[in-house]
Length: 272
Ligand code: PEP
Ligand code: MN
Image (cartoon, protein in one colour):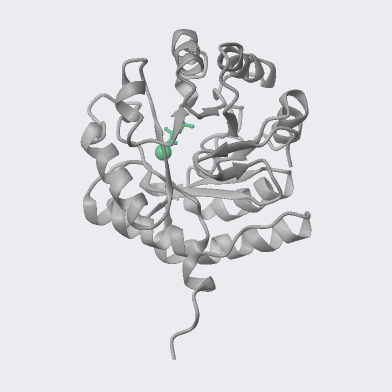
């Protein structure tokens, strides 16, 4: 648990209950987004993730559906009682995102975009601040302080792996950063097991490590058809495998004195 709980539309982050945020890397289509929403909600997730404006390494890669992607994310989330988390790239996008995005994700590549951090601080919109993959814990904490200094206390951090000399994974998940950042700021810290893994083969191990090291929740990429995903397909857990992944995380949560809620499918009365 963290000292300061951040509550987003009735959902507390940093309390005894872990918060799972899951969905595709990018919103691609209505069918893909609705299928993801259904499975993640029934597994116990509280947020549907999905990028509409993507920052891709190559300019020729899929850049996202833009505003239409946000509308689809909102519709699919609403249909399944979920909240939404999606990346915001520019100051201009903040007001545009507001009706559709409950938690504004600041991507790793934007962690030190100070004008954007200050604008989000002024906006009072809840922010998920991902760690820059080339940034120290100290730099990450200072980035969060830019948002807090403008009077916005709804800040949640996310450890998503840093660049090291290791090349067997896409990034190196810095598990120690989780308790350290929690102690330094007292804010909730989530763990993204997908981007450090780079391959779905390692996502389960990093998910369980993320819960064990004190993460207040998870941000996981999952897709109905990873082989044909337009973005980050290699690290996407198939939707068919997602409920089992959450169940394992739930057991680790119990072992470390936390809870992870059951989804609608598990809590509904069995059909007669
Ligand atoms: C993402 O969440 O899809 C993403 C682009 O993450 P990051 O900014 O951590 O690379
Ligand atoms: Mn991604």
